[in-house]
Length: 137
Image 1 (cartoon, rainbow, N blue to C red):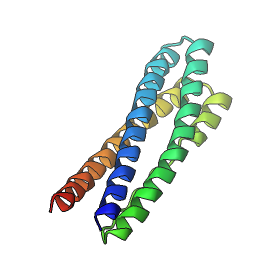
Image 2: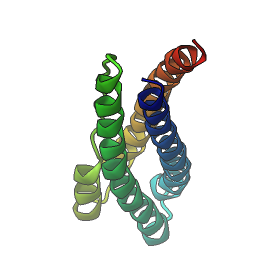
Image 3: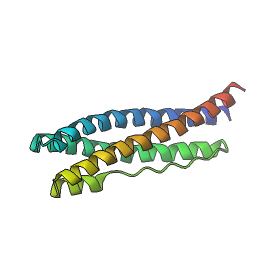
C-alpha cells in the first residue's frame, strides 16, 4: 500500500507542477492580451495567440496528468473529479474575428482558466495532505 501511496503522491506532484507552468504562461498571455485590447494590433495579438496555443498544448498534457492522478487514487480507494477544458475555440475566434469584444472575452476566459487552475491546485493540495497523512501512518 505504501508504494501505491507514493505513486499517487508523485502523480499529484506532477499535476501541480504542470498547473504552475500553465499559470505562468496564462499570466504572460493575459499581459499580451492587455496590449491587444489597448490597440497594439498585430504584435499583441500574435504573442497572445502564441501563448494561448502553448496553453492549449499544456492543458492537453495536464488532462492526462489528472487522469493519472485519478487512476492512482483509485488504487488507494480515493476518488477525485477534475474538469478542465482547453481554449482552442478562443484562438479560432480571436484570429478570425479580431475586435475589441473578442479580445476582452478572450482576456476574461484566460482569467477564468486561471481560477479553474487555482481550484484544481487547491483540490490537489488537499489530496496531497491526505496522502501524506496516510504515508506517515
